[in-house]
Each structure stands twice: as structure tokens, then as C-alpha cells.
Length: 112
Image (cartoon, rainbow, N blue to C red; front, side):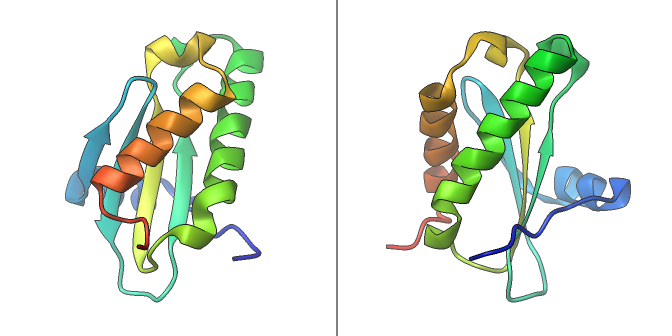
């Protein structure tokens, strides 16, 4: 896929939250809504409930890297927002990977 197309504006996040379906996993929640384009955009959100800045940034980096690893296997034309859950503060890379793959699989976004 090359570049990561990001959801940046607050109204874009709100649109995904309000109109999309959500898939709850142990350490994260994936919100998914179909967009009117031929590409998939992604956003990442980590609340202060997770911990201090170092912990939040580390979790966000792990989410981004896991998404980057599977992005070429995903269907296009969706907006996806991954939101960290409060109990994710002690999750490692593989825990996040398992949750992300499970959520994307349940959303039927992984190409066969």
C-alpha cells in the first residue's frame, strides 16, 4: 500500500463513531464505516485512561505497526478507527496484533 492514509479531523472521527459498526476486543475497539472512495483510511485514538504519555504513545505505535503489517491484505473503501481500551496498558505487540486481526476478520475486511 505504501503510504498510510490517515483520518485526522475530529468530524471524520465522529462520522466513523456515529455511523460505523464497532468490533470490541480485549485491548482495542475497531470502528468501521464504508466510505465513497477506492482507498481505506485509518485513525488511531488512545485515551488518557490508558496511562501517561509514554504508555499511550507506545500503544499507538504498536497499533500503527500492526495495521501497517496487514494493510495490504485489507479490502479498500473503508474508514477504520482503532481505539485503545483502558486495560491495554500492559498489552504487548502480539496481544494487539491478535485483537486487531480478530476485529478486522469479524468486520470481514480481510481479503480471502
